[in-house]
Length: 256
Image (cartoon, rainbow, N blue to C red; front, side, top):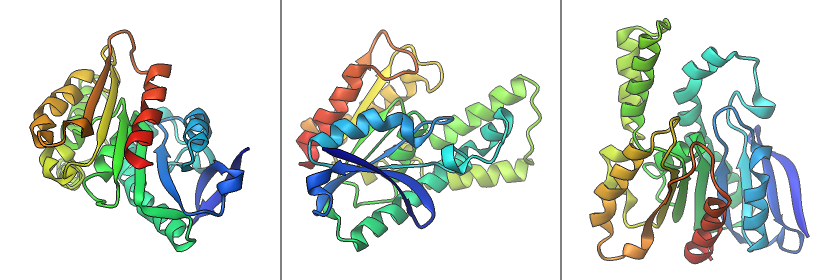
């Protein structure tokens, strides 16, 4: 039987999913991050399939989402996007440490994954945490600074007032560079990484992520089985069932 528990780690709301008979064992861990405007419960289908394979799965609630909602409107949320992303990257460490302190995880077998914003968080986390053994980005992008600049320019083009001075924007870009995998691809260090992306995606553009994949393939010349990009020519900003099952297979291959 698969159990789903609502918990809090250092006041961070999460869902904790695991086979009941394994709940007290030291297990490989998957941290799965939801998308922008979503909530942790929306990814339970991923967690269920991962838990069936013997993983301990934790679905964190991103700031300003779900249980942490603060009633911001859409525009206010858009301006919080990168604050949410960076905060989520940092909170992954907190959650991992709590689980480690409880003796519930095998620290040599930790994976991170996410959809859309969660994929962006996943790719940023790879720049920070060597303890991530493998990762799956579903509709994510590694281009933190460039993506942010594009968002700002799109808002300006639509005559949306930017509540940040040029100096504040420059400071934001400087901070984002610390998490931008395109600026430090060497931090991948050969770790297994799977991308899934719909070719028709207009929210997180497909082409830039695919170009990054092509750029980093030479880094995997000695272990090409550790890098993969699944292109779905029919999908826009929604993961197909095939993408879901591919993520399960990836973690079974690289984390069990």
